[in-house]
Length: 193
Image (tube, rainbow, N blue to C red):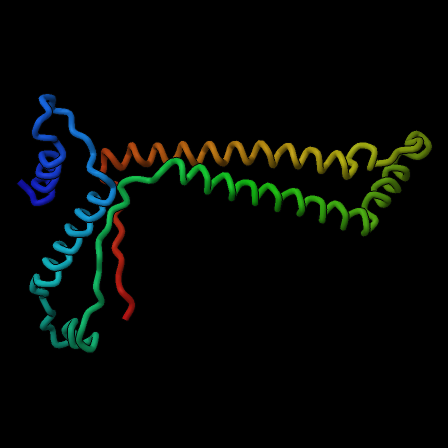
């Protein structure tokens, strides 16, 4: 039996209350879970630090300890096993709202610059040259006015906020299910020299 499976079995046994008759387990408080995780990480760190490191004896390469000038940087291997969907939803909602505001402002600026540069008058003149007298009183701004474009942009921004928030939250739920099966994403953190 591996060390981790033995620790998990011990945790499950410790969680059960001695006076209960059913085999249902309750989770220990968050502070206890964090302390046990930190203790396991510290033990793993000590085991990794005490394990003998094989140094290369090749004449072309220097040993790792001599190349680094002595002490190696500390490393910690962590595993991301759960993402809180509520915090993901709040964060993605705020980022999506910010993205929607940026979209509306940028469309307004682009539309104002196009109008100031005379693009709409140029389009009207081109249509009049192509169609001649059949164009009548054609004005492109009747079809794509600033208010219409900004209204459509705001509608797209609102839909975007709802979709991005929902997709991010769903992704958090899916990650949690996948991490329960596969163990999550493993990350190795190293200390700077």
